[in-house]
Length: 231
Image (cartoon, rainbow, N blue to C red; front, side):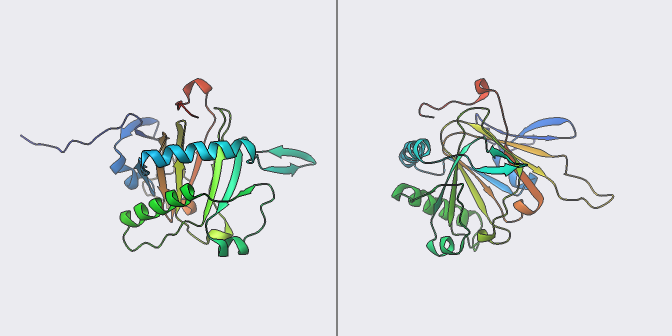
């Protein structure tokens, strides 16, 4: 009798959609489908809870939507954002981000960054990644979102490793490939990966993710947002 190892399926599993079909996959299969790794409960629970309370309070008083002008009309992003620099040297070389408030990183935020750095280094021994910038987004409800995009920031340099940490309510984090495929090869351009991100979860986007993939937190009905006691 053949035997297969059992793989744990979490209550918020990763879902892959391609060729019109959806399938649930274990976390361990994600890196073979997209240049990303999902981390469940990367922070000690007390630290994750304290950081949520801290950032939620700051987001309500100092974070704000980014704004820009289109044909003389002022537009704003459907979310509030704030920036925290962890690397003072890179902050000094960065361009001013007037539309994004800059906060002072707390002890809890720096500790979370240190722990995530250690986890990333453990996943890829020898990889050199040091968190330098924190961009916080607060999604007030299902209508708050960020559309499909890649992160190209000069201050981060080419092919950056980016870690997204989720605190509070559960929203799906989506990835889709946008690179051009070679003729007569199996295409993954129609593949979309949906990664539910409950409180205290993180997704690592590896160095080729921004080059060939886009990511998004799309609009959804308020009733479908996975609620959290605090946020």
